[in-house]
Length: 364
Length: 265
Image (tube, rainbow over all chains, first blue to last red):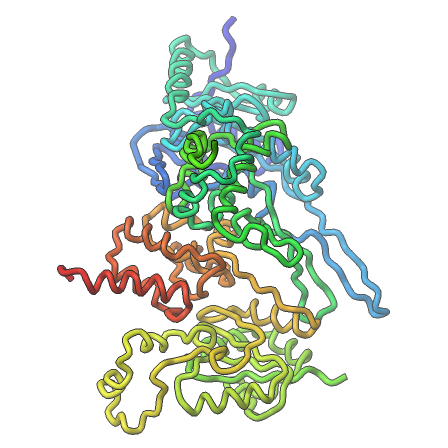
C-alpha cells in the first residue's frame, strides 16, 4: 500500500497546531526589511507566500509572484546560528563583596522549546559543524537541544548557491526531525527519529499520487543544476600558498568588513569583554561575535599578527576551506552562498579558490 | 576617600555630546555619587578653572580664545578626554578647512565680520594639547561615556573599540541596506560605538563615528561609484562629519578633484 505522506497546503496550519500542542514555539522565515528573517509564526499567512529571490554577488532582492508556494526561495541573511550561538550574551557575573573578596555567578540559559520551520540542508550541515565546535559549550547546548528542526528541501536555489557541489543540499539529508518537499499543492513529509515520527503520526496526511512523486524528483534534479560549484583544490595545499598573487588581488577588492564571516553559518569566532556596572561592584563577562577580519582577532601579546586585509582574507579562506578539514573532518563551507550575496562588494571566494589553483608565477 | 573630580568643558560645538551625560537620567545621579562634577555648564555647575581628575572636552578649536582656554584645561586636568567628532576631528565646522577661503566665507555670512575672530582652520583638541583618550561619534553615546569613566575609576585603560559598524550591524541582525537596496553605506569603513543605529532603522551609516581600523576607503568609494554615485557625491559622503580624519580626508580629495576636472560638471 502506498505511504500516506502528503500534506495538502490547506492543512499546513495543522502542522502548526500539532507543534503548539506539543509545547513548541514556532519560528519561520518571514519578509522583514526586504529579506527573509526567522520570526515567531502565529499563523501560516505570515509565511513568504509567492516570494522568489534574486541573489548575486553583493546583491539580494525579493520578488513577489502569485505562486501559492511558501518556500520558493533559497535563504535569508542568517542561518540557524543566531538561535544557538547568540550574537552577544553574558557568560557570568562577578561581584565584589564587602570584605573585598570576589564571588562569581553563573548566568544559566533556559530557552523555550523552539520548532523552526523552513530550514535548508546547507544550514543543517553547518549546524552539525557548530555542534562539533560548541560540543561542551554550556550556553550553546541548551539552546541547541531545545530546537526541533523542520527542513524544507530547497527547490529554488539562488545564483549564489553551490550546495550540490559541497554535498550539503539542495535536499535535507541529516539533522532534521521533519523534512518537507514543497510542491504547488502541498508537501511530501518525511521524519527522522522519535520526535519527528510522533509529529508525522499526528498529521492528517493523504496518499501521495505517482505524479506528485515524479514532480518532486524532477524538482530535485532541477535544483541540483546550480550555476556555481566548488572548484577542485587540495585543502592541505591552501595554507602553503601564502605568497600567491591572488591574495594581493583580493585584498585590493575586499573591505575587510567581516560580513562574510557574520553571515557564514559555520563561523564561530567570538571575543569577550567586561561590562562593569557604574558602581564598580558588579560586572558582566560577555562574549560577542567576532571576525577574523577584525584587528582584535589577531592581537596577541602586544602585536596584531594579521595587520592588513591581505593576511586577514588569507586566514578566512585558508581556515574555512583548508585547515577546517584537519580540525573537523570536512570543509567549513556548506555551499549556502551567503558570503557571496552579503559581501557589500560581491567577492566570490570560489573565484579566489580557482585563482589559487593557477600556477604562482613567482614559484618554480 | 575623596571622590574623583570631573569637569565637562565646551568648545566650538552643538552641545549634543554633553547631552550624552544629561540623557543618562537616573544613572547621572549614580554617577554623581561616584564623582564630583565641578564644572558642567549645561547641568548648572560653573567652575571652569577647577583642578580635576578627568576633564571631558566637547567641541573643536576654532577661535584664538579657545586655544588659550584648552591649554588651561590641560594644565588643570589629570586625564583629558575629548568627546565627539568636533573634539576629535574638527567636526562639521572643519569643512571650512577644505577650500581655504575662510575670509571670503566669513565676510559673506556675517553682517559685521569685523567682530568675528576665528582661526582660518579648525583643529581637533589633540592638535593643540595632549589628549589621553578620544571618544568618537556625533554625538558620543552615553554607553561610551560611562565605560570610559568606569575604566578610569578602576585605573585601567579604557577599551578603544575601532571595529567596523558592519560587525555590530550583523550582531544586531539588522538587514544590510547596501546589499538589499543598493544604498551607499559608510558602515564598512566607520568605527562602531553607535550600536549600528542607522542601519537598524533601515538607513545607511553616514560615518559619524570616524574611520574604523584599516578603513578601506578607496575600495568603498569604488563601490559607491558602481552604485551610481558621481565623484562629487562620493567626496561628500566622506567629508560630511569627519572630513579631517585622514582616511576620509584623503579619499574625499581624490573624488572631489576628479569631479572638478570633469568637463561635463
